[in-house]
Image (cartoon, rainbow, N blue to C red; front, side, top):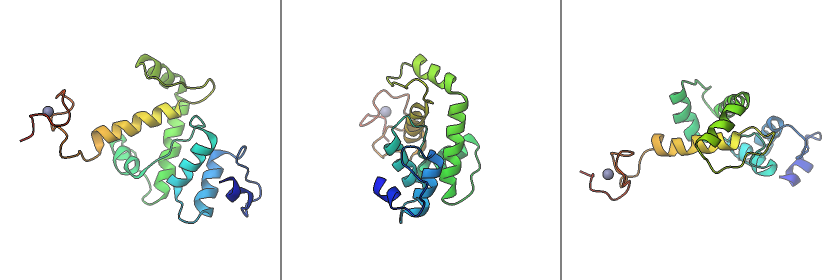
Length: 156
Ligand SMILES: [Zn+2]
């Protein structure tokens, strides 16, 4: 990524100091085959998990956004719209989300001064996986009430 940026036609881009929004836009536009999600992940990994970026995958656009009542523009730009909405919401309520992570005893360290975007991202991803993704056929249809999620006797 540093090599791409250093050889980019956009001369005012630097990995360490360019705002994440600008980095993501540059990567999505300038790297062949990379869309917004790839660019978001690249910036997250380059800057660190607590840099404030919440990468948005297809399931977050197609399943999570409708559940939240969020209308996104169809197409790739939906990933950027959703990312900005989530980041804005988490940043605006940073204290409340920090308190929630602590109250629920999540074992995550949120650096002082960092928005709890990593915490929010992980919660949203696992919520989506547990409740919105199509369940594997061996998964109990009575979850979460059934204490045995896989291979129980509840299957018809
Ligand atoms: Zn069961």
